[in-house]
Image (cartoon, rainbow, N blue to C red; front, side, top):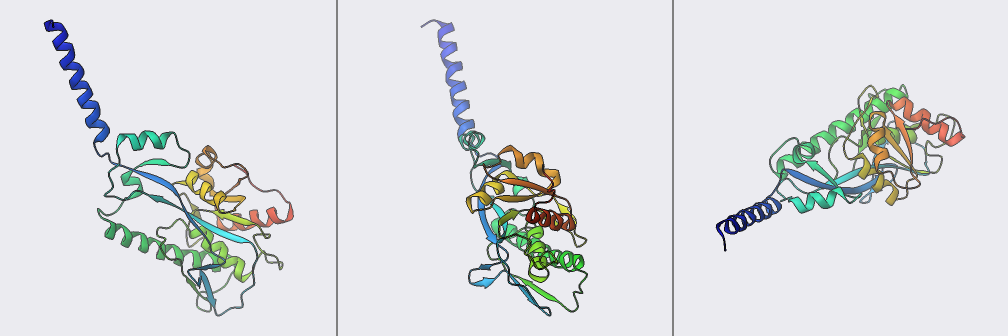
Length: 259
């Protein structure tokens, strides 16, 4: 074998070794998938998701489903083949690990952070809903119970559930119009809807669980359209008032915002 051929063989072997190393090396990414959904007007593990005391509540029909994603853990090894596969599967998304787990270095810290965010989300959802109805938090107490879910992204759906249970559309009808409606979005105490992550995966989870309408933060319309399941209607919202008005229009056949 000539010296040139030997050099080429060595270089080829080194390149192959490098490619194998890169393919097998853990990378700072997480792979996310469509997660569970839950009807905030119903029960979770045998307990009502929303319990209200101090005011008469309505019997509701239809469903308001919060949505979620699940992702590989902070300690999981995500390698190049996992990332490549995620690019070609609509029910998977490759996300920077710090975007999925912005706080904490282990599962315990992350679970504690997510639980804190969920509690804050429940409190602001209560404030937003009662404020929208001009009702006092001193007189009405709301307890929200949803096991095994963390983070703030269920805030909008919690607030809508409280409004539906207390007042519906204000004219004796359900906000849902009997439909299964899903959505996502943070909520502020003043009723402002904020953006969240993983919207394309959440629309898939919603369609899987029977929803035909998805409430999405207005700023995330483009993301939601990217992998929108067949038969799913997107309704962009930026405030709780706007979400309530959109659901009323949907029930009555009025003009409904679209992405």
